[in-house]
Length: 211
Figure 1: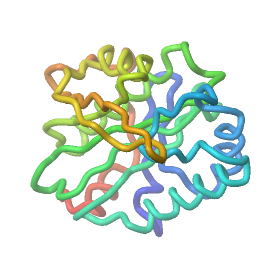
Figure 2: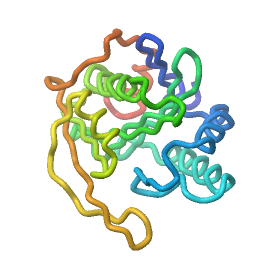
Figure 3: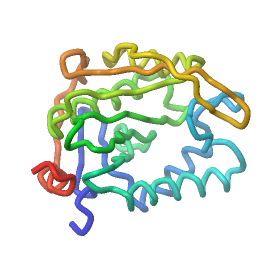
Figure 4: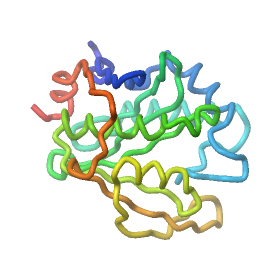
């Protein structure tokens, strides 16, 4: 495997998570362009879903290329494409820096609107968190959501995160929004109902300096 992260595959029942590769872009772009959230909402720090369909496409591809190219033991973001019963439904990520020292990272995700309300968002976050604790030696994980994003905060509660302070952040030009921070440990994690099956972990651990 020329790029070790591409060998990773995490499955839990009908869910499968694998690092985003270029072959995923046509489906990912179509899914994002079809809608991730209501047009008058903005759940993300960087408003990458705003603008024309072409602008959304360019931002999505550039983001994933940049994250992939920047991966190193000192700083990395593992961006995975999530499939449910073989159908691509969204992305689940974990991002960190100085992981060899801190053993902590921040989860992030998005889900195509037509898949909202089916428990998929909760399951894919549970799966990523369980993977981090079980296979990459994580000791604590964090997340965050804007106060006007109750769906994301509800997912966090279901997964087992607890509140950990609030921050005032810029969201869109000239707009301040309150962000609720959250923290999760292995003890508070509500694990996925299906056991995890993983492939490619030794190669990923070596790539991230975890051997």
